[in-house]
Length: 484
Image 1 (cartoon, helix red, strand yellow):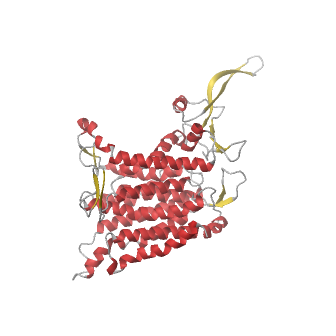
Image 2: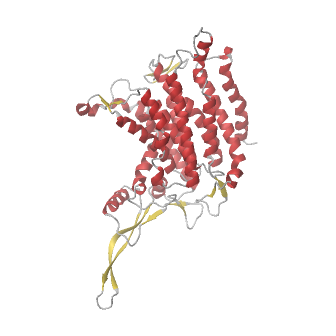
Image 3: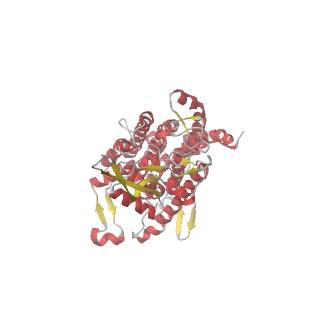
């Protein structure tokens, strides 16, 4: 039996204990719902790892199958495994609903109440949690429709806006803040705080669109979608842990962590602790399902996650970033995705030809290596000046490789009606596709798919380290006071 199998089956009893432990009155400890969430994360790992291989043939019979485009003569592989992950994830979040409110149930049990409900029940927290689950369910449905109908990129970009509607309405109903603190260098012109009003809701809607599509754009290789989602989820969870009231104290330089509502980054704020606990309740099970899927999606992949996975994971990140009020910190964890999205914009918005698949292509002389794929321009149409300008700038930055060829200009010959070609140089005939993997191949040369994905994961982890350094180190240069 492999180490992964031992982990998969050995973690289930421990997870069940953590889930049932808060239900035992004598075993109540600090943050009981958090220990239950950790148990649900273990169950998510076990359930996903068990169900994915069992349902592979069923997906293939239903038509959800495809060939690995980066392997020569590769086998047919089941697709849409993200539907299994999303189903397990949403089911566990629904089962987890009573745990964050267990203390309220205990108070109501021992109080003499009149009426049908406890007067101090946190309805706003329950509404936020239920809205989050509804957003995830809608995102899962829309992602599955994308897997079924294979929606074009220009049409799928605004789809996540639909899934974000419940979240935005709950945020509005709770009078969520729409003001932002202005960085010190800009306060001379804009003041210390500015209320964005409806623009802030537009920002939140666009955030949900970005987090969903950015993972989907940086996709197509074994393990890359699941790997980046796992790294981001772990990063968000680590950030949340810094705000929790631990029963011990320790110092990192001048920063003191730990202590019940008295130290650490929560700085005595119970509201901050509740926000980051909410984030952890969503991130821990997400880490579990991502870890379970990565086992079967890593090179060589035995299943493909499909668009469903990208939709529901991206929406999960948007939900915690918006409800936890740390959307700027969340975006710092998406630095590779932001770079890839900005780089892809000329193709996504029609300046540069955008083929159906922008994956790297197999090396013609060595099928184990990958080289940058190309987007070719039509010979009959001249390249627009704006397109040439954008590509030339990207070429100067070393982000693309351009191929030039002659421009055919035909002038009519009055004597015989034939045309005489006149050739002019410097016409762009093709460019490497505008994605991060192709940039890495242009920079470091041909490499295997496994090595390329590992390099992307190294960049993702490096981005996380830089994000923490910027958020908790350099932020004081732009903001005064304690920016927690």
